[in-house]
Length: 436
Image: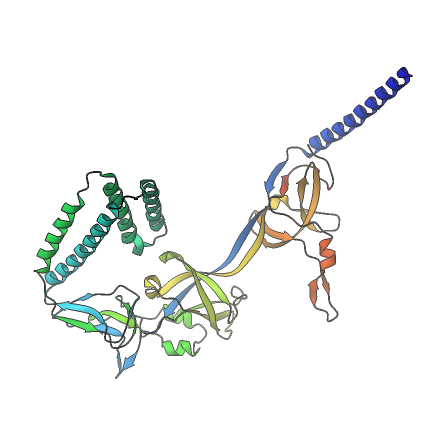
C-alpha cells in the first residue's frame, strides 16, 4: 500500500521535473535564438517642428506731427542728456524721461551718485538682515550656489542684459553670510564710507533741466533708424503686401545724431517675414505660435498669426502679433526667429525597435513578465533615428463619409504604456514568445 503510494509520488515528481525541464529548455532555446537583447523604456516626449525665418519688427514708434516724427526724442547739442528710465519702462504724459547737464563730467558724476545710492541701499538692507537672529546659514549657502548657477545660465543663454542683476544677487548673498557668521565684514564702517563718497560726489554736479514725455507709452534709449520704415497703422490694418518682409529687411535706415531715445506708444507690436507656402502650410490666421529669437537669447514668446498675404509664386508674407513688451523685445528689429508651428506628443522610440506584424501594422515588441507582446502604435513624427508614437488608432467612416475613430476596434489593441520595456534589438522576436 505504502509502496504503491510512494511509486505514485515518485511518478508525479518525475513528470513535474520533466515539464520543468521542457519549459527551461524552451526558454533556453528562445533565449539563444533571440541573441543579445537590448531594451529601452517607453518615455513621454514632445518634439517641436520649427520654421526658421528672418523678419522685421514693427512698433508704434513713428507718430508724425507737422511732418516730424514726435516719437523720437531729440537733444540740444549744448547739453548732456541722461535718461532716468530703463528700456521698456512705462511713461505717462509729462513724466520725466531724462535730465540734462552742462558737461559730460557732471553727467558722469550724477551717474556715479546713482550707483552709490544703490550700493548704500543694498548695504542698509544687508545690515537689517544680519541683525536678525534667525538668519539661516544653510539656506544662504544653497542660495549662493543657486546664484552661481543663475549667472552661468545667464552667460550661456547670452542674456547679457541680466548679467549685472546676477552679479549683484551673488554679492548680496555672500555679504549677508559674512554678516550673519561674523566673518570680519564691518558693514557699519562700509556704510559710513559710502555715505561720505556720496556726499562728496553730489557736490560736483547740478542738473540744468528735464525732458518730459509728450504722451504715454514705453521709453527706449536705442534709436536704430528703422522707426519710420513701415507705418504701424498700415500693419495694424493688415496692409502688408507679399514679399514685403524681404523689402523691409533690406531697407535703409536713417539715423539722427541728435536722437537720444524714443517713446513706443503701444505694447502691441508685429513681426513680418516672407516664407514659402510649403514651409508655412500649418500657419493659419488666428492661430497662436511660440517664437524664439535665438541670437538674442529670447525664448517662448507667444505670438498670434495676425495676417497672411496672398500667394505670389511659392511665397507668402506672414505677420505675427505680440502683446508683450520688455527691454529685450523693445530692441528687436531685423531678427532670425524660430517659430514652433506644431508639437508632436507621445513616446520617443528608437527606429530600430519598430516592427510590423502580419497585418502590416507597425508596432513594437514589449516585454511583459517573461513574455513578448506585440503592441501596435501610431507614428506621428519621424526623426533621424527615432519616432514619436502613441496608441494605435483604428479609424472608420461615419454615415456622412467623414473619417472618425473606431473606439470599439481601437480598444481591441493593447495601448503602449509609460515605462513599458521595449525590445530595441534581438533576433527572431515573435509575439507571445518566452524569453529569459
